[in-house]
Length: 173
Length: 298
Image (cartoon, rainbow over all chains, first blue to last red; front, side, top):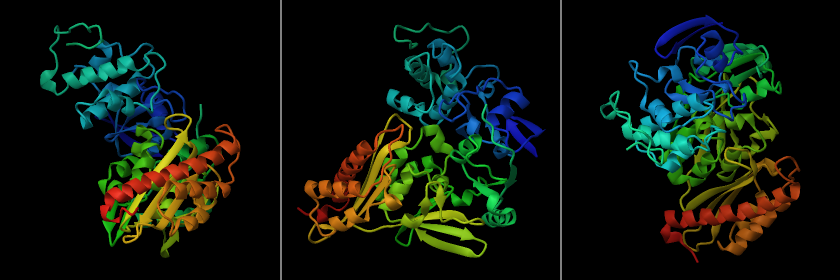
């Protein structure tokens, strides 16, 4: 069957088998390999991307279900060459080590901040509770999302060259 | 790599279109809602439909509404939507209790209420919640709608009364004054299926404060119809006390047929059925008293 999916603002039409999973469509058909394919059982969250305006575990969604919809992947987080505050937060607060869970974590974080601009640590931990990180113990992921919350909303984005180092808590003043 | 077997796919544009497609493709067609139960089952080859009828476009089936003394939940309502619904949470706190512990926040954004019920997993949470609330399911076919009590909806593990050519479209819950409800679940980890879980709804008599009626829902513990009619019968007319709730829990557990599996031994699950029933009743009573302070009873 032919499907047309708008991925990060670009329309892609492909002929696919109806059984093709969305994560494989994104990675193998479109070669957008930022999204990761992990547990295959909708437990780990490495494959989280946005379907329309909602994060989904794309190993449990058929590519056919995305026909006529919008998809946003980690490649679609940056704006005009500038990393999203969530991406900056992960970089500055060491929100990743191996990086496997990172694209899914960042897309969930972006969605969380869009709906709750000033989340508590507890709310951040709840939001990512369906996603597994085996490196960080989640501490630095929480810090990264808090950093993004502080630096969100465009105007507060720090200019290039104005990149403070993380303090003892991993947060940037 | 887990991939479903070859399958045909049809996207429904309306309820009537979906019903027409189901009628055309017959008993080997399956309705695809959120897919968060069906697609994993297809990956494991536990289910191998010939055709999927995708109803994600039927957004008019995604609603939580109050009309004519009933709370009505559309089958395509996503779990997160039910969890956010004040109309549901204010009247039936059990639904928010249960939704908070179903899967994880991302799965809840796409998984649907109707899909969970029609999957009919014997450990499914909402099946117990709706059994406790004495809900009714609306099932549509091209011939028109029919209704089935929640307690008659399941015919066995992964089996329901929904026939080929039909779609479950709505859950209706009667709103009765003087009520409170709660859900208690024990799981091995966040997001997992329950080892055991119990839901309770309680309605107090306005004058005497005794229990006018009660609903007990149980899941994962082998309770017939996800409920305990015997415990409910015991509670009617009894004072709303810890002693009554403890005994109701014991009766509920006596009627369960749990099986030992990787989540725990049968006797532990039976213990959970008893204890969680009593706890859910106690919490439901607290809420009934907050909702209707005039009916506080003893």
